[in-house]
Length: 113
Image (cartoon, rainbow, N blue to C red; front, side):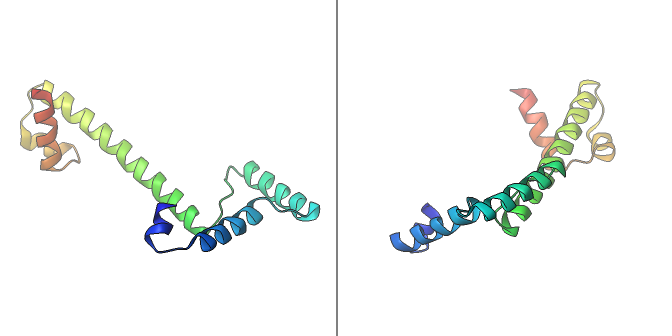
């Protein structure tokens, strides 16, 4: 809502977009609702979610990639921490573990506290 306000949308414009969204998500006619429910069920069986737009689908894919990257970074930091515990030199850690020198510095600093 705040983003629409920031773009200068009027109350009537915001109301119109919300009504359009509601119509798309909750069809009023029984035929459309049945068709929509069947479509949602088919997507659910495929393990996919029903999104309002391609923008949401891209955002979801991007979020999944970010999550995967974050998970890989957490694993790499865990390996680096174990190497630090064993007294391995900085150069060896950076060579074996795919983290940046800055990330290693942050890890070392966090372990001092």
